Amino acid sequence: MSQAPDSDYRQALEKALTAGQCDGDAVRDMWSAYGRWYGVASSIAGYWKSDEAAALLRQGDRFRILNCTEVARASYQTLIRRFPEDGFAPLREAARASLRSLPPPPAVPGQPTPVRPAEI
Image (tube, rainbow, N blue to C red; front, side, top):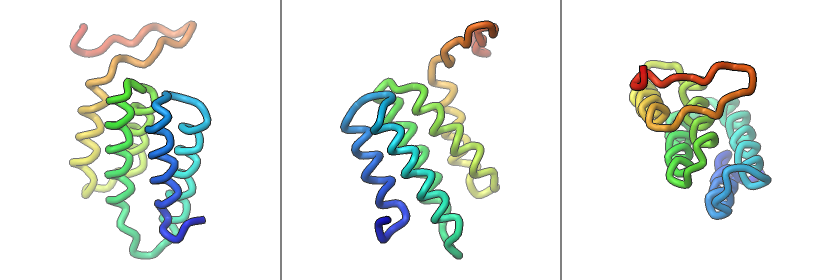
């Protein structure tokens, strides 16, 4: 593993963005590297989680620009779920606002299609 816990993640993110695809090996490798970063970082005393939360927000924003809405959605939802502490409220709100800007997720066969609040 690289010296800094987030180095592998940064390289994998860059590779996924360069590939410009919404799924496949590059995206799986990015999430895998993020998981390793999260696992290593959470065991480091005094680790500032704000870097990780901000990285998830940037990741979501970049994939939203690429029109990879499901990767963006997963990034924003991960941020919201993993950082419930008060200090992360501004980042969570930014993630929620970005989630609201995405089209609804694809319909799952057998489940009703979700309706966005603005459409009600």
